[in-house]
Amino acid sequence: MIDKIKKYIRSLEKEAIPQLSVNCVIFGFHEKTLKVIVNKIALGQSTMFVLPGGYVKQTENLTDAVQRIVKESTGLEKILFKQFAVFGDASRSFEKEFKVLRTSKLDGDAEVLKWFSKRFISVCYLALVDFSKIELKPTQFLDAAQWLSVEKAKTLAMDHSHIVESARESLIKELPYAPIASNLLPPKFTLPDLHALVEGILGRTIDRPNFRRKILKSDMIVKVGQDNSNKRRPADLYAFRHGKKTSLIDEYKLGF
Amino acid sequence: MIDKIKKYIRSLEKEAIPQLSVNCVIFGFHEKTLKVIVNKIALGQSTMFVLPGGYVKQTENLTDAVQRIVKESTGLEKILFKQFAVFGDASRSFEKEFKVLRTSKLDGDAEVLKWFSKRFISVCYLALVDFSKIELKPTQFLDAAQWLSVEKAKTLAMDHSHIVESARESLIKELPYAPIASNLLPPKFTLPDLHALVEGILGRTIDRPNFRRKILKSDMIVKVGQDNSNKRRPADLYAFRHGKKTSLIDEYKLGF
DNA sequence: ACAATTTGAGTCAATATGACTCAAATATAC
DNA sequence: GTATATTTGAGTCATATTGACTCAAATTGT
Image (cartoon, rainbow over all chains, first blue to last red; front, side):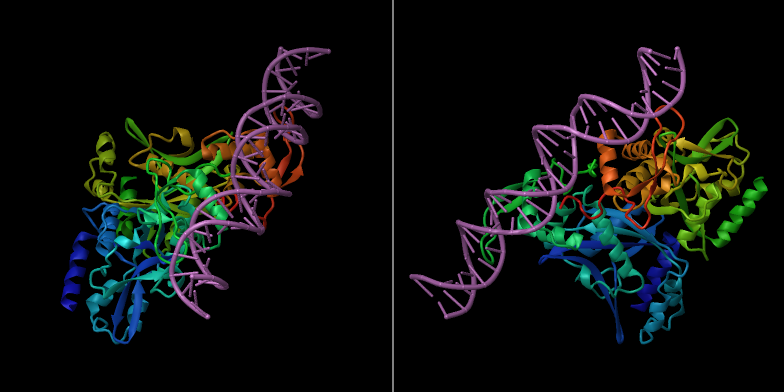
């Protein structure tokens, strides 16, 4: 294992852009909750969670690296993604995290330690996926991938919690411009689903009848079926009209 | 000159993060027009324009590098800036531009050519400054700095025109969240100024009486004087209330 | 004094918003 | 089988906002 990691690090030192990493905040929506994919690292006693990420090969476009990383985690190829922040403080590295993990098999290894002590500039992307399509796979060399509610993603390693928080703010800003909801929901969904999704993104409640009125009037979705068949009164199923605008808010309107 | 450049390149190779550059789209507002700062490079017959930019020292925070670059161009220290895009295609370098500039004194120099043929990932920031405060200074080793109307910034070198276009789109997205107008206007301004500024940012006309009504009702500006004393009927002077919201649009409202 | 411009102020119908109520359709409890 | 709690769909109504206007006041140049 450690030899594989060393070999990988050596290949990165040859083929990747130095000191540059990519991190992805992959959003999904499930059980009325906005979630992100994180990877568990279990080393000895300690456990930490990090965002999916990777490096950029010299021959690889930055956006191709992003798509590769998202595919590695989710298996999906054509997804909506957007660069939203860059984290690049001079002290930004995994050095502290590694020193805490004293029990790790990796801890003693100078070469690995040196790699993770390096300063990395992290170019951060948010990505939107249909939760129901996903089969989670951990990032290379990491132990397990899992969904984590955005609300609970407060204790990720290094600055990764800040990255998630920043991603959520950017997601709000993108609401009027990008087809956020149609990329997070399955092809057929109910209005209560959409309502919960927007509430989850904005982090506040929205009057249900008013939300319903506004969405239906906008003509962005079409009824495609009946019944949801689960809890109480069946809900109508809808699909986004494609071709039409799929952003939830009127672009460029801004009140003028 | 060429020796100074070589010395600078050697210092960068030692002290800067490799293959990472920073570019700044510095916006100003003058004569009812949204403008950006560009640097002229006059080498032999050809001339090209590039955005202010630079590199990040190993010991320097990314955001400090940005502030340093803006200060180098404008002399200003505390400005509003925001990261908005990263350009990082595998083929992204100044190699082509350099080969075109055959007449350049630099062209023959292998060391300089090698540096500018490198692939650079450019982290891009937009910055807002009060045009009236600025004394332009060219970026290190470049010939002259000047303001260029955003509309006319279509023929900058490499991908810099795309960077400007992307910056303008991001500026629109930031309108509801950041104090854009108050950072572009002088402390005292007229409503026609503000009107022209917002039209310039959005790239479309806005009904003047309606704009006036909306801004005044929002209570974000206060009348601080009379008369502008130039063309026709004198306009009232206003200042932004600070403490109050200074973003032009209602944050988080988004129509729900 | 008069015309052309620019700024400030106002009108009014149409539309959108916010805060509600109410009934229909279902699962579960009784 | 009936009652009850939930969830979904539909509607009401007063108020606020928007979009498309008109019009007068203050200035400069003729």
